[in-house]
Image (tube, rainbow, N blue to C red; front, side, top):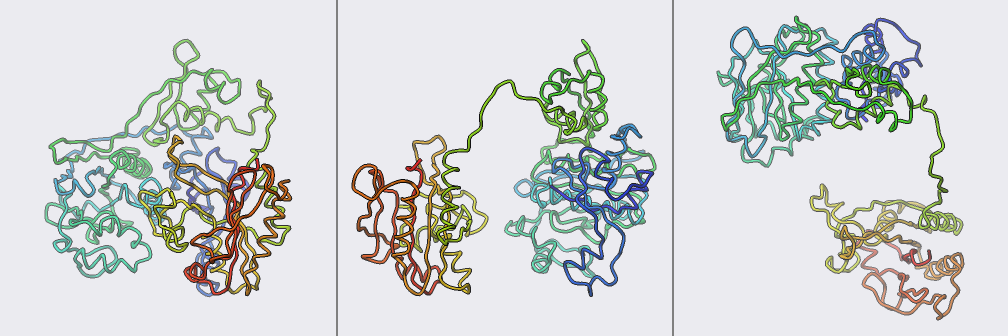
Length: 587
């Protein structure tokens, strides 16, 4: 859930009234006040009081916003949404207008097809920035980049001072060595190759380099004079940077997802067209694709949906008239009216509400406007008695008793590297029946674990300085390939325990097994209801110090002293004994 920081005084000024410190969380149904702080307090916590000496004491509200409400990611959207909800203003009507002169064009060339093939553009004409408005404009772009744009992988936003440029604009792709311009906040020109090296140490921009750094061509946008506007998705050019004094803003959104590029453009222009000379109007721009097709942006499309009032009442669990439901939806920025037989509600969905995709989204907004706390609790017509899932119940019981036996529980990652479950344990990866991740982002998370042992050994390695002995356990799922299931894999609940000390402690692990069997009411013995251990061998265990465990007529796991090679590969220096069993046969 994104968090938006807004200055308290600016918020109150925009709302036209002040509130007590606890009141803002009740202003509307969607934003949630997560607390308040100041720039000085934030820096003090992160860098110390010395660094915070000259910082601002202005009170900031930290407001949690639903991830799909892109229209609430800035002060302008928050205020507009709250004012509409409180019925102080009506939802504004956003309009796309054609320019008096020649329309601005963005021409996409064929070279961009394999890199970032889509683009959308628009112009905010005669906009008036102040310092606070400018800061909000920049912050909204950053919030969108981190949210719907997926850290610029899907969409990258570029904003430019149109008065410093000359259209039409060209969106193309060139060799890195052929791109040279002065980027934002730099004093001289650099080639794209030089910039990529410079930004590898930049805390803000280095996270975006991977998007294009291995491509043979880099995307770039130029004006008719060859001036570089931006090299998306990395950096804009310094020549066209916007300032507080900028009057005409050219906005371009490039990316790999055409739908999201259009949504992002709509959000930016609707939020800040409020400050244009003609409020809530946006000047159109034309984008020409390589196939010759031409599109005019922004779309600012309104669409209408019809939902029956009885459906909303049924799904939410309330009894409201269609008129009241229409009023609730209008307060949620969805202009609504009753039509037809008096049970149908026609809802107009504005371009700011890209999150409304189905009737269920409209029903949810009606519930939010009504207030979840105002919905009367009723007993369901179908009576059921809930029980804990048997496997989880058994797991919880074993956890308590393992802790009582002096072992400490750990929770490790369900994903691990191939090396952890194969090479380090002396097993070939093909013999593990491991489920592989098709596109692992890191070598640490390549496969789903097939045993809990590597996670415990890595935990010990990270805590070697702790007093000995280290007695750890985990009860969690492992994943094994299984062609008989519809998903091709199956989970098994395992219990694993490890004893790490100056001596192997096999007798302690053996004693723990006996205690577990005692708790599970499984007596020792060869019969079908008993358990027994038999000498065995395993690549992870010391020869002659391994046993296989049989219970109720089936093999459930192994225990023994780990092989010195295994201990060394996990960067441990002392002997270690382990036990791992499948607990599902005991249900």
